[in-house]
Image (cartoon, rainbow, N blue to C red; front, side):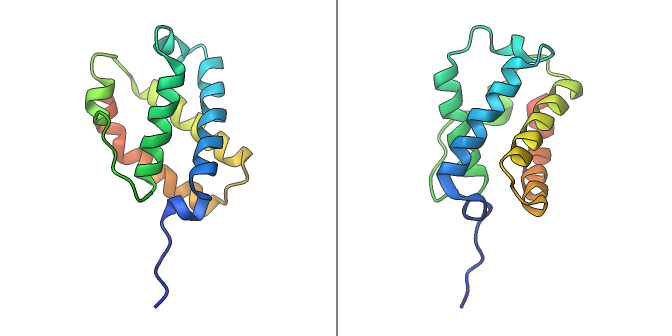
Length: 120
């Protein structure tokens, strides 16, 4: 029986997640509409957390022990424009990495499921 691959496996595993997060944060930090949210953030730690979260969210065989989306984004006063900017940078990153559109769509579906928690 052929077991269906997880999104994590389809995009290339941890190497793909690592590459995507590194490119993604370069875009986020260059975006004046959202970069201020990271002014006092330890970016090495933040990037590590993001890699772990995305690997988990995409179906990696690991346990995620970080904060929930709601906890991590509470008190940030995020708006839909902020959410859309971040999601847009993620989509641009995946295009740059030549991720097939059907897999980008799977990523987008996962991202959209977090929207209510991120915006509180």
